[in-house]
Length: 223
Length: 79
Image 1 (cartoon, rainbow over the protein chains, first blue to last red):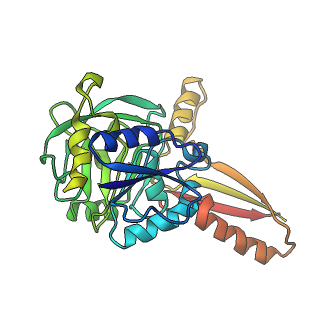
Image 2: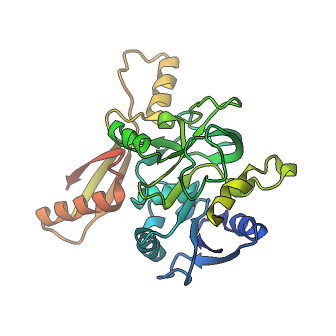
């Protein structure tokens, strides 16, 4: 698989993301935000975590107007697979490639810890290696992870199985740790080719570092 | 001309910063506070002296970048 990893001023998870996909045997290429196109035959585009443009104005709001994002929108609209992690999720919602928005955490804290998540939908190109209801442990590190969508939007997400992951306790009972509507930690678009989540699967590849649950998540894209 | 843009979270969208400031004011002994909302003010200085043009331009700036209308609302004052 050929994975394109975007890089904006302030991105800081691009090397972790590269490391993760290369460890799984894939080739990766960093793509600077000023590029007008993506590497030919990319199988997956990852918008990694970080603090693009210092989170000025709103997280992701400036990055979404970078030249490369036009190419990402065209790629996504043609059915290409896109994964946004943390700041990448924020950028994809700002760009309108995913519904809803991410607000400041309810407790106003930057939350950085290993978090248990409940797998909600697996009929997609991302979580197909996971089981519905399964509890995964994945690190989170964000201040603006409080997912908001209006009631009509939430019903639509539920009806189309677009909710991927919910924050949960160790038993898998959903628990909104940051104020997210319906405890949502990750979603996909209606066409199920654009994915966004606040947790960092690329940081959960080795048991010695706390969890290797991220492996199965990222491997989903191989199918 | 100068445009003063105020951006706030929409009514009904929880404003965690406003809520925290509200609690802080309560615990400092300020009484009778119904609500505290925190937003941001953006001041845009424009070359044009045409009020209508300025208003239209700034509205477009708000819709495109300055506000995220999924969660925020905005007001524009032209001076």
